Image (tube, rainbow, N blue to C red; front, top):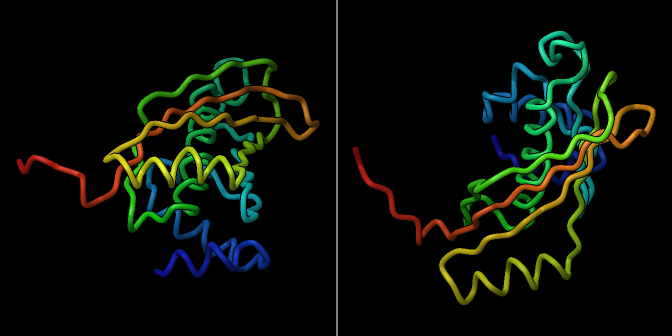
Length: 169
């Protein structure tokens, strides 16, 4: 499946967005049971949604903290990779910090945005001079009534694939 084609088309086509989400469910199997989806995609911004459903609930019938953390991680990682290219760079989450502000009792929307200047100065230029970099991304999560329910910070290690060394088992 040519994801780059669907990523570009998903910005303007509901059908292409549906196809992209279908493919992402298979590509990232961990997210599939939670039904985390790309809600809307722009050139420099993404909104993902984690539905308010039984499998995503905690013991007090709110959206589980780990589900919201997963939506935050997915949002920032997906947008970064669409900007820099997953064929050229590898992205690994180093750490994740969440702050919860309000109880989540509806679908939750995770919003993340990248400024072109930030991308150039923090990611692209440093990767020209070094093998790997660390970047921090802040993701805001809101319920359907626009209550700010949580803030996530993901710390990503970005490295060119040709610099990746793995041990064979």
